[in-house]
Image (cartoon, rainbow, N blue to C red; front, side, top):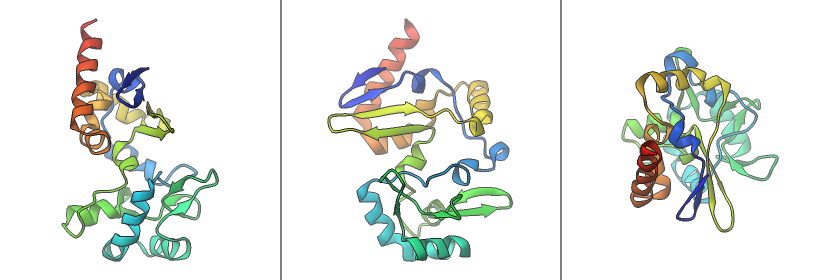
Amino acid sequence: MFQLGKTIVSEDILEKDFVCNLSACKGACCVDGDAGAPLSLEETKILEEIYPKVKPFLRKEGIAAIEAQGTWTKGTDGDLETPLIDNKDCAYVIFDGKTALCGIEQAYNQGVIDWKKPVSCHLYPIRVKDFTEFAAVNYDKWDICDNACSLGKELEVPVYKFVKEALIRRFGEDWYLELEKVAEELKNN
């Protein structure tokens, strides 16, 4: 672990390799697990605002879940998160064949909205936990992503490079440039 500004960062994001391999996992991170995607308070407001534009991209099951639970929910631990369909799939999940995709991102890709998706989804496999004085930036190892780890290793892409756009979105370009310096120093030692 090392400190970077107001973050405590796990060295795993520099040392581990990762490249999503949708052809292997079929987007399992969007349909497995026991909680929705983590959201910030600001993101809950965005979801409320964009839902009418995103709704046409969603499955009927997702629409039913959102209209029953809201565009976001509070999890059992009190954290803000996306609603789930039958405590499984994210309500915003759509499918291309058997591959899970994000309906929000689909609306973004088609130019209907200008918000890509929750930053926690964009950052995955990095998870950020905010505390009063700092944020913890950690690599989340999940066995459903073993193929992504293998592909990352094959392509020699460390986690922090794979999620560069999302890290800049979350922490800013200056923070990311400092992260790159730390990664270079670690590589040279």
